[in-house]
Length: 354
Image 1 (tube, rainbow, N blue to C red):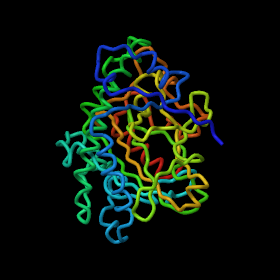
Image 2: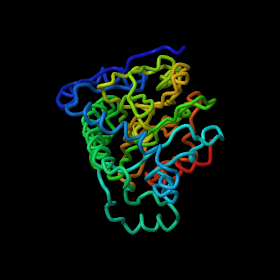
Image 3: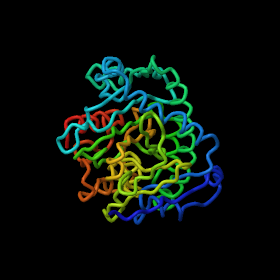
Image 4: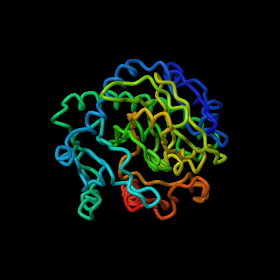
C-alpha cells in the first residue's frame, strides 16, 4: 500500500484575491518539499459541469470502431480527436485507456505565421481544427464549458505561482506562467476513459506533463452506463514527491486539481518541478469490473514561445531527476527552443516509447 496524502486545498475566493500572499502555501504544494499537486474548492458551476462531461467519455469509447476511426487524426500526433493504443510506455503500446482531445478555447486555429507554416510543411502538424463527435453532439458544448472554466481557474492559480517563483528569483519574468495560461492559444483538453477489466499494465504509465500547468478533475467510476459511488483505495492517481517517494493522491470529488508541467519547470529554472505521475487500478476496481473517467486540460504558451531558464540560472537546474523514471529532458529541450519544437519532440518520444 502507498501512503495516502490529501492534496493541499485553496478556495476559489482565495485565488481570486490577487493581492493575497499565498507564497508559503504555494511552496507547500510545489516547492522543494512539496507534493507537486494542489486542489481548488468552491468553484462556481464546476461540479455540475464535471458530471455532465465525464460520463460522455465512456459513451465515446464504446462507439463502433469504424466511427472511432473517423475521429482519429494521426497527422497531428493524435492530439486531436480519438486516440487509443498510440502512446508507448516502457516499449509497450498503451491500450488500457482511450483519449478524446480538443482545444476547449478555439475550434479553428489562429492564423499561422510564415515560420509556423514552414514547420507544418516539415511534418510538425500539431495545429489542426477540432474534431467533434456527430453521434454525440452534447460532447462539444460540455467539453468547451468545463475546459474553459478549468483554464480560467488555472490562470488564477498561475498568478500566485508566479509570485512564489519571483520571490525566490527576481530574474524570473513575474507573470510569465499567467501569460502562458491566459494568452496561450493551443491548450489541450483530454477526456479520458480507462477501460475496465484485468490487466498487467498500469492504466497510465509514469510520465510528466510537458505543458506548463495541468488542470485535472477527480475521476468517476462507471459500470453499465451508470456512475458508481466508489473510491479506489488501492489505485487511482499516484505521484512522486520531491524525494521521489510514491504517494497516492487523495482528491475531493468537488475540487479541481492542478499539477506543474515541464514547461513551467524549465522557465522557472527548476524552482517548481513537473509532477511525475501515473494511474493504477486496485484489486476491488478490477473485481467489480469498473471503468474510470476523467478530464484534464494541459495549458501552455503560444507555439513560438522560446523556452529558457531565467538569466543567471544553469540549464542543468531545469532537468528532470533521474529517479523520477520519466523521459529525460535532454534531447527534447535545449535553451531557446520554441515550444512547438519541444512539443513535437516530446510527442514523438512517447509515440516511439522511452
